[in-house]
Length: 201
Figure (cartoon, rainbow, N blue to C red):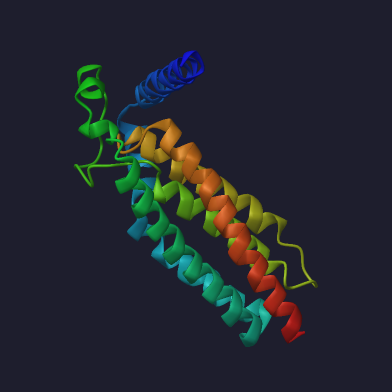
């Protein structure tokens, strides 16, 4: 019983730290940065970027490999989204903007209320997972280096994830767990795509 109490105490302290860090990060705002974080948080804005990346898959990899890599990225997003929804309803952790204590402590919100639960962040998972999966996809072109792309897409993914704290939609812990889950899913789907591309070769 004592060990259970200790675990409960550790979890309680971890959650309190998560709440405190979320509020500390969320408090760094002004009209200029608010606009930037709101921009990064809007998924629809990035559809054109996804399309351009897919076009480059076909330009650089050839249609067979490009089709495999594109499908791996699409299937990754579908699988990660469904898993995120499953966990959100299973864990049922309120979003900061739905949490009365967080609102009372001054949470700054840049977006309207969304779903009730926020653990873990699908935005963070999808952005970092797409970065992993697409970077691995470009590596199927052995003639060129894609370090510049990898740097860009990983920085973009981190900014998208962190923006969710600034707009009030997620706790920092939601985002960090989302990054971890997305990286794992992205690596799995990217690895399957690489195996398929090797068979094409």
